[in-house]
Length: 96
Image (spheres, one colour):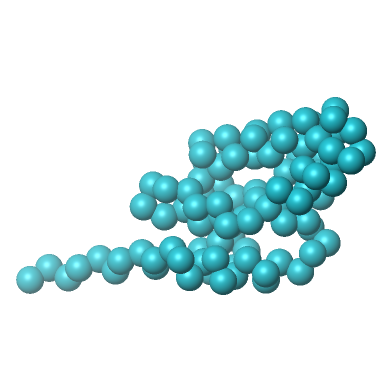
């Protein structure tokens, strides 16, 4: 992860703090997958505490698909192509 290399160059302590906050964000997403704000279609954003990064993900069929970890100042559309690999949910079938 690019952010890990960046924070590692600052100090190992900062790098580990970043990774701890990332893991805490993932744990929150796993506990409350529909608790984060929708930002684009089915894509949700979980903000990393104390760092200017977001975890972008899709929750579908009881599965969390992490698309990207993005800097908050970066244009967020670079990850859109990744959503094409995740099939849209199936429409409920009509009763006969």
